[in-house]
Length: 239
Image (tube, rainbow, N blue to C red):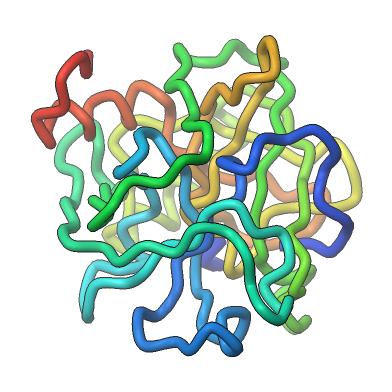
């Protein structure tokens, strides 16, 4: 999440979420012992070799690495599956503000199914390593943030700020926290999920908000925006 604020809250990793829910985007030059210090965004695994994230995380600069399946980025050694990114595609039109990362080698973690557009009132959970607040330190442990899809009018000020910053998403949903934690700086690109039959269903990608407080709504790229991004990448079966 950017502030806009870029898209964070402490707490233990959620019980029962598949390993594929935990996707960190980090500097490719980071040593294994420095993973936490070099993680700058999160992502969502939508195929064994494809990660969706927010475009502002890596619009410029070298290609990153991706780490999938690790809760604790300060662990020594860090577990999970680390992969180099060999290509990035920035979304256009309906997929604006999204980026697709192709991994050099696939991972074995369960991927997220791209869901249909969520109804107002749908409850989701976002996963990331962002800050608790704008002036707080980023945690090592992944945190989970319960969210609820709300009427898009609640995000009117956020959308206006995004438009002024030339970061307006193509298709989006508005979500607010249902607890005391919100997505924040460092959570950009993270997936907002529901679980169905133990499988992850991707309901949105964290983009940004005006703040990190528990009452602050945020913009999340909609799942149909992700589907368009996959179509723009020529992925088989993308609709």
